[in-house]
Length: 70
Image (cartoon, rainbow, N blue to C red):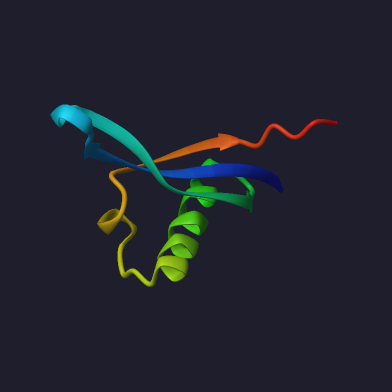
């Protein structure tokens, strides 16, 4: 299994009405691939935030392999 960093991102209006991207949460997930990491992260995010649907707090999800030094 590989480790992935999954970030839940939300668009918000910032200072002077400009749109800004804010990270609502970051999780490290062990999974076989990016799709599995995404699904595991969604479930964990909902559990930790006491949500029924992750999209209540985020607009999109970014998934990337973790870059741990060897």
